Length: 163
Image (cartoon, rainbow, N blue to C red; front, side, top):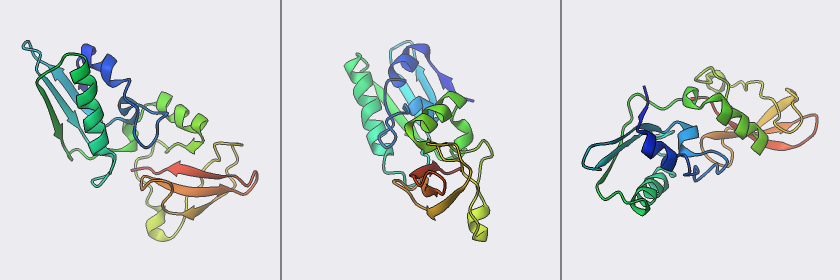
């Protein structure tokens, strides 16, 4: 369950994801808890999308920066790995933001195990909507995305992998 203090939510929802600027860190689901006590001390708990996600340090910096600019002095940011982040934590509105931005959003089915079997899943092109696509590379512009090509409109696109 996600717990976010209302005062903090309005600040955190302004912070874009460093790798996918169309999403905020709240859209991405990496904020698991954001609380403020009666002394104005803030505790934020984040879960990385991948254990080695290079964007996490930037997210921590942006969280701290936004909170300090808005008068918070005592800020604790905790990174937790359990439960592991999943694409299921991305709300439907954020999935639509991804599609409009040109990234095929993950399906609401958690993990994609077809790649283990040497197969690729059917992914719809965010440009034309065709399911006639092929994976070009297991890794796209970032480790959390795979590179696909639409066989109908011939456009390359990223697919946000299910985790």
